[in-house]
Image (tube, rainbow, N blue to C red; front, side):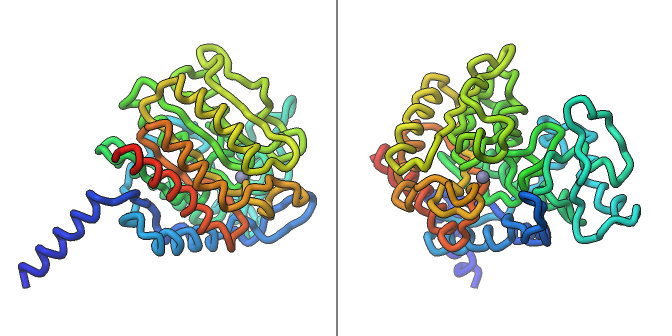
Length: 371
Ligand SMILES: [Zn+2]
């Protein structure tokens, strides 16, 4: 009996060490399930749903790239390295205060926003959401802070795997993170998982790069590192003049102070094809290579897929599934320890297979480089 157990655990160890890519996730993500969001003047069912992570999880299980492990617990310290303490306290407490003040228990969604010359803090529970959230697409429910922290822990656990010598790891983060700034949530995002992981890896390397391939500009990641020269942020996304988040993501935003030229935005107009996208990715890859980072964090949004429902008026990118292995392979060509953190992607039927296609492209290219 003992021998059987030892053989089993030995097999498990071998599997771990020969894993093509380890995934980190937890089924607890489903406890964060917004009933609706406020979008384009309407209350609509929330696009960012537990079904997204479930379909990715199922596709990864079938692909068998390696073990699927739960996140380790890191506490608040790595969150505070990126986010303001007052913002974390808001996320942690606002739901109970909002309900106690008589507002709907369905979800916290602000209706009055602090903006430009009207931006003094106000801690009334009905007002504070408009200070710490920039839109109506980041509803807060009872478990939101705890589950967002677990998504950050998934990214941090993946980061730890890189520090232990894994060449790559995938964090199935839900909720996503790249729209969350240091003290501002929005766009389904509360904690910036990719930024938290990048900052964590930064303690072990002089330079870290973030590559954001989500359809939407990673405005939160840009803000967090905008005045830093030690973390390069490169984002390929839809033209913000016509697409969310509208108010940042333009090509002339290149960083500030010691972060000058450490931010590269590559906005794409129209409906880019696979070929158009690869040209942009080549530009992004060249910039990352010249920065010579020790680690790469990929904000892996899959809402670039043709027909993703979140693209404005159906006018999104025209990427087919065939694009994703090419994107993964080009990322592998950088030859860096790479953390993939899940961001957007809402065309749920294809989402799981698209994530697998991206990671498979990376894995195959990396294996070819080794042999
Ligand atoms: Zn997106």
